[in-house]
Every structure is written in structure tokens, then in C-alpha cells.
Amino acid sequence: TRQWRLASRPVGEPTRDNFDLVSVDRPEPGPNEVLVRTLYQSVDPYMRGRMRDAESYAEPWDVGEPMRAGVVGEVIASNAAAFSAGDIVTGDLLWAEHAVADASELRHVNPEHGPISTALGVLGMPGVTAYFGLLDVAEPTPGDTVVVSAAAGAVGSVAGQLAQLNGARVVGTAGSEAKVEWLTDDLGFDAAINYNATDDLSSAVDDACLDGIDVYFDNVGGPITDAVWPRLNVRARVAVCGQIALYNETDVPTGPRKLGKLIESRARVEGFLVSDYEGRWGEALHRLSRFIRDGDLEYRENVVEGFENAPDAFLGLFKGENIGKQLVKVAEY
Ligand code: NDP
Image 1 (cartoon, rainbow, N blue to C red):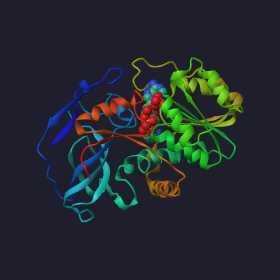
Image 2: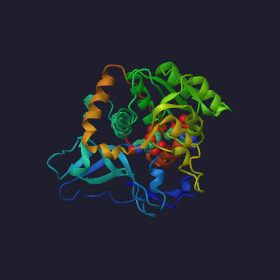
Image 3: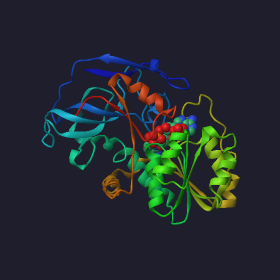
């Protein structure tokens, strides 16, 4: 069986050379452990932080060691009472075709509830992030103008739709025409800005947000956030979810220089981590699945085929190759 290991730490944008594909013996499950065959593997922006040798909310990976990822897989062998061969499970496992996990690290996925891959996207970590980031941190009210950056991504597309369901006017930013079309034509966003197609992001934000901005759900930071900031309304709320535009920076970027706006607007800026909501995961999944079932929440997945292409799927996140959740299909289900 094969595993991807961290070959070296990237400087700036990661490349395929930072990854090493190795063959190893298939592991055997120990007491209370389960052997899982990976069907889908997730790649996520936060993994860039784990490639770095610096303190962060996620531990750095060691060079030469296998990396970890969200996985949906099939139980091949089990020494745990709660799991049997054939069960579909999800958990934080390895970038690997097979991995063993302690039973406490896994939860069941019911294939009758929808495509199993959604346990890594809209009905998994990114969906739960959008749910609590938007509803608990940003707290939109009907009539608010809500701006979401990386709006066509896994988290952003859910956050924007939840804002709509709460009666907000929603504006997304994204990096291509295809994404903007998906947001406005299919998801019904009130406006979407292709930041790669404009030299004047500030005016584009102004035109799309004539009444200013009440909520900013930020996935990217950098120039998009700079353009949004001056339009924050009185008592605006900024939920800082991610800063992907800065993850590959080698120099420490200049700090925010527009904080004076917060005095005038009395806006609240709050970062959050999905892991803070571990105890309420079930509540989010329950409501998100109901929205999907009722046709109120749409999702897309960008599936890269083949375990050997997992690094490319990861690198694609920084090039904006994905519409919706970026996944790797490792084996047939
Ligand atoms: P996405 O599905 O949104 O994929 C990443 C997207 O980011 C790309 O498709 C691309 O879209 C955009 N992007 C990449 N580079 C840049 C750049 N330089 N400037 C602007 N946009 C860029 O990923 P996720 O939905 O999984 O994650 C979104 C954000 O949420 C990330 O920042 C992630 O770290 C964060 N996150 C935070 C969590 C938390 O607990 N706080 C949990 C999960 C995710 P485009 O074409 O639009 O540029």
C-alpha cells in the first residue's frame, strides 16, 4: 500500500517536490483498532500550515513522516466492537491508501444519507466551519449585506447560502468567471466579483455593496480584505475564517493599517476555529442535511482521480482550481 510523506518544507508556494510517494506494508490493526481502505481523501488549505515548522493551531508535520488528512473509507478489518468490515467511516487518518485508526478516532457515515464524499465537505469539517462561523460568529440579520471571500470554495459556498437563508443580501468574491456564474446563476447570490478580472477591486466592492457591508466572512485576507474594509458599516461583524492569500508568504506581511475604520464603525472582528465547536458538530450536520434535503443548500465537489495525484489536488487549492470542495478519489466504492 502507498503513503504520501512530507519530503521537505516548502518555501513560498509548495510544489510536488515537497511530497514523497512511498510503498509500505499494509498495517495490521491492534487492540480496539480498525483498518480502513481510503475511498476519498480531503485536501485542505490548513495543511499548508502543517508543512511549516512553526507554532500554529495545528501541529507541524515531521519531514519524512506521513501526513494526515480527512478520509472517508471502508472498514477492511476491525478489532473494535463498534465497527465491522464493510462499514463506511470517516476520520482524520493518513494520506494513505490504507491506515489503521483507534476506534475513538472514527465515526460512521451512512451511505443512505447521500454521497459518502460529502462527509469531507458540505456534511463535514468545511460545512460545519461555515455553519458556526456564519451563524455563531458573524450573526447576520435579515436585510444585512454579507460579503464572503473565496465564496465558490467549500466553506465559502456554504457560508453564503446560509446567509441567504437568514434573509441577507449576499455578495461573493471568487477568482474566475465560471465561479462567479455558479454563485449568481445557480446559487442565487445577489452579486459576485471576479477579483482576477478587475483592476479596481475597491470600486467593484462599492458597486456591489451600495448600502455598505454588515458582515464580512473572510476566507482569504490580503488585497480582497483591504478592499472590503473601508465599506464596513456601523456595528459590522467580521468573522475571520481563513487567510489563504497569505499562507505562502515568505516575508511577514505588513500588519493591517486600516484598523481606524473599526473606531468609526464600532465593528467587531473575531477569529474562530471549527474545533471549538466539537461538542455541537451533530447540531450543524443535522441542520445542513435538512437544508440539502429541502433543496435550500447546493454543493459542488471537485474530484481529482487517483491517489498519486493527491499533491496536485492540494496545490490546486492555491491556484483556485476547485469549485466547491476539493477531494481526491482514491478507490471505487
Ligand atoms: P476552498 O475550497 O475555498 O479552496 C481555497 C480557495 O481559496 C481556492 O479555490 C481559491 O479560490 C482561493 N484562493 C487561493 N489562493 C488565493 C489568493 N491568493 N487570494 C484569494 N483567494 C485565493 O477552501 P476551504 O473552503 O477548505 O477553506 C477556505 C478558508 O477557510 C481557508 O482559508 C481555510 O484555511 C479556512 N478554514 C478555516 C477553518 C477554521 O476553523 N477557522 C476551518 C476550515 C477552513 P479563488 O478562485 O476564488 O481564488
